[in-house]
Amino acid sequence: MADLVELNTLSTPHEPKESSCIAFNNLKKAIRTENPRLNNGHGIGILASIDYWKHKSDGHDAEIQKWEEAHKKIVDKAKWNKAQWDAVPSHQKSEMWAAVQGIPREDLDFNIKFGDPDSDLVLVRSAETVYGIEIVGKIRMRAVRLDSTSKFSQNQKGDDGKYKVLRTADGKIDDGQMGFIFVRIHHPHDKHEEATFHSIYHHTKDGVYRAIQPNNQELIFFNQ
Image (cartoon, rainbow, N blue to C red; front, side):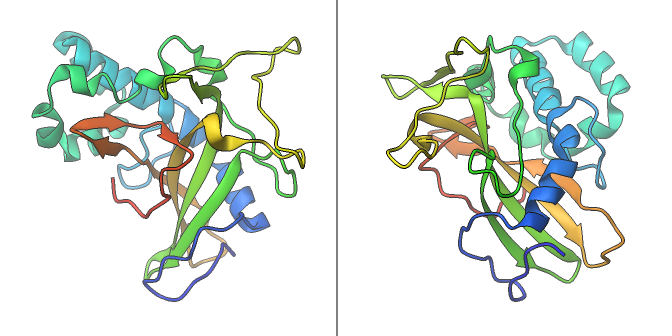
């Protein structure tokens, strides 16, 4: 069973339990892929969202139509708030995934393993509802880092081909300069049913929407 708290009460941020690690890890493909397993129209994955908003900001209406036809279920969720997005200037839409521009798609990845101090699921919060348990998780994206100007850019790779991470004195990853995504999943009360991917948080600041969050962004419940 996933992490439990009292009804309608969001738990304080805490390190993920084994059950949460398993649930998020099982949904890794859905969180990343262009064709995630959907939950009632929810669940636009990282790559699908990048493609969708890139086409929107570039104004390729014909390509959008083809893409929507090919990915109808994915786009259903986007259509739910289409009016809101259409009111946003294109230069602001392009900021949604600007932090990962130029980064190879295969590098937009993460690793989750319970008990591993380097696991990329670093925090979770949860709340029990009449439908099940809602869990929001903070996931480290190693390919993205804050540069010296406090803007996101592609991280550097070491000689081993892996993205570099800074370490604190006790050997833990220093997340101060890392980028994160906030992911919401739903865990049914029935233990025989699997958890499902719900959505990725899009933070709004000064009218600009961003999917990549800095370490100091508070992990909150969201309904996007």
